[in-house]
Image 1 (cartoon, rainbow, N blue to C red):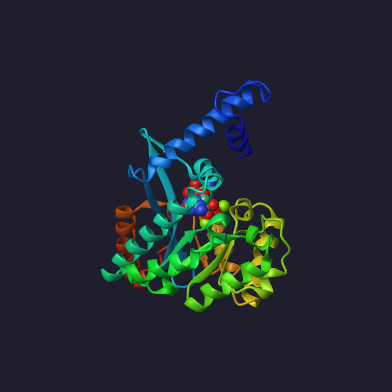
Image 2 (cartoon, helix red, strand yellow):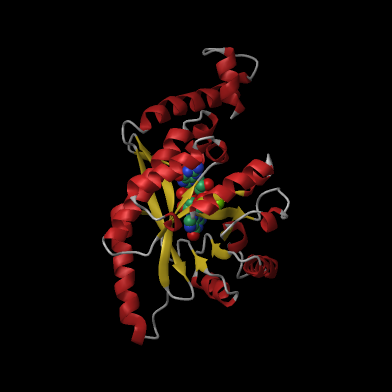
Length: 296
Ligand code: C2E
Ligand code: MG
Ligand code: MG
Ligand code: MG
C-alpha cells in the first residue's frame, strides 16, 4: 500500500532506491489503480450474493453482498483490489454504488414476494469514517424504499481501535435509524473485547478461521461454542462464516449458532442465480415439511 504513496512522491519512472522487485510491484499497483478508476464507468463491477441460512427454521434469512471485478476476461478478487480502492479513496464511490445496487436488488426481490430478506453490505473503515456515510445510507434507503431493518452493515473490529467515541456515535445513529450492524471476522482483530458491551451491535460473525478445523480441533470447538454463548448473553445473533461441510453445520447447530454462511450451503451467486436459489430453496423446504430427510 505504501508502495503507491512512494511512487507518487517520487514521480513515475523512478527506479533505484527500492530495487527492481519493489518497482515492479509499485508499477502493478499503479496500473491497477488506473484500471479501477474506470471500472465503475465501464460497468465492470458487479455484486454477488451469498445466502445465509437460519439453522433453527431452515430458512434463508438474508445474504451478504460480495463485490466482483470483471476485467479483461478475468475475475479479480476483492482481496486484491479492495486494498487499492481503500488506498486511493476509490472505495468511497465504489462503496456507495455497492450499497445502492444491493438495496435496489433486495427491494425488488421483496416486492416480488421473496422476502423477508436482510442484505448485508461490507464497509471498509475508510467508508465508515467518511463524514457523509450516514446521509448516503439514509438517502439510499429512501430512494430504494428498502426498510432500514433489512440492511445490515458489516464492520470489522478495526473501527474500535481509533477514536472509539466517534465510532460509538456513528453506530448509535445507525441503530436509531433501524439498520443492523454486524461485526465481521470476529476474533481475528487486535482490539479489546470491551467494546462488545458498550456499542450497539446486532450480529457477530465468527470468522472462517475458527470454523475450518471445528470438527477436528477441540480448541476451535471450544472457541466457537464460547463465542456463540457470549454473543447470546450480550443479546446478539451469531452467523458462522465459511461453513464447508455438513459436519461443521451439525456441530454449529448443536452449539445453538443462529445462522450459517458458506460453500456447503451456497457459494456467492450472481443476482439471477441468487433469485433462482431462493425460489428453489423455498419450494424444497415447503415440500420437506413432511419429509424428515431434508438436510438444510
Ligand atoms: P468477508 O466480508 O469476510 O467475506 C467472506 C469471504 O469468504 C468472501 O470472500 C466469500 O466469498 C468467502 N467465503 C464464503 N464462504 C466460504 C467458504 O465456505 N469457504 C471459503 N474458503 N471462503 C468462503 P470474497 O468474496 O473474496 O471477499 C473477501 C473480502 O473482501 C470480504 O471478506 C470483505 O472483507 C471484502 N469485500 C468484499 N466485498 C466488499 C465490498 O463491497 N466492500 C468492501 N469494503 N469490502 C468488500
Ligand atoms: Mg463480510
Ligand atoms: Mg468475514
Ligand atoms: Mg473474512
